[in-house]
Amino acid sequence: MNSLNIDSMLRYLYNEMSAEESQSFIRMINVNAAMMEQFAEMKEGMDLLNSLLLSPSPRSVDRIMAYAAINGLSMQ
Image 1 (cartoon, rainbow, N blue to C red):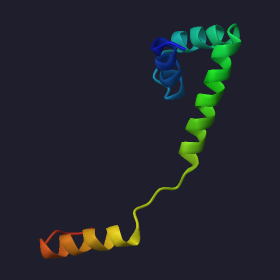
Image 2 (cartoon, rainbow, N blue to C red):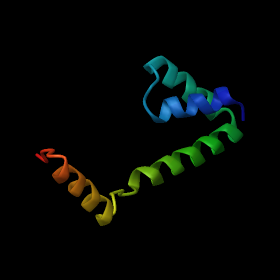
Image 3 (cartoon, rainbow, N blue to C red):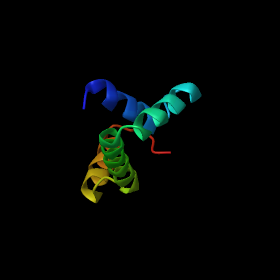
């Protein structure tokens, strides 16, 4: 897989292609089974990352709040 194909996959997944580019990309992966498989794996990974709920640890929040209080920063 070359970097141009990877770049195209990422641009498609992040909706950074024009309508014409998207159509061309879909046609390209539909005729290339290996590329379609790589795209499916990349999309699955992206979907998994998007499903993660990330938040700072309570200790991190406490440290930020303490820093803000010491430095007179407003937490609105």
